Length: 162
Ligand SMILES: [Cu+2]
Image (cartoon, rainbow, N blue to C red; front, side):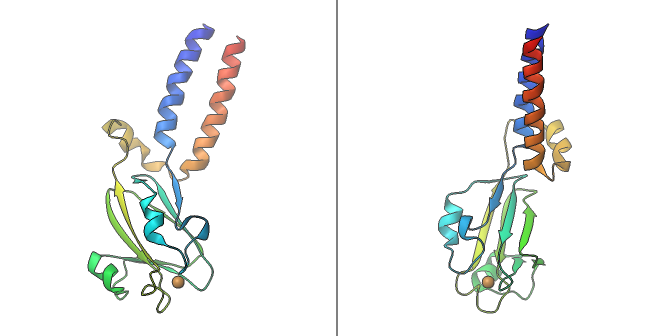
């Protein structure tokens, strides 16, 4: 019985970690959302998958404006922003594949290079339609993931002791 449990739990662990291991990307890494950050090189080291989150961390000198098109992004045309944020710790969920454009709303900062273009790819190709539709509620995925892992490790230990 103990062994059966262990196998079952191992399967559950595999499924759950796959389902909830959405990543949080702190934009700009340790430098954060700042005009001195090289966002192109930061982006080149990242893979953005559906379900992942962007976190913009910045001082009150900055803000975040989401732009609707490549041309607005190129020209730093902030006039038709899709969304704007200014909390200093803004979380953006990447909920579908495609490209999104973000710039700083402070005068002149976008022209100084304070902008980033995020291309999201569809997550794990192996996930079934059923599991992807049920994953729409994984908002706090990182902490959720940790809770699950702790729970499961606990169950595993318990079952091994049986
Ligand atoms: Cu700025």
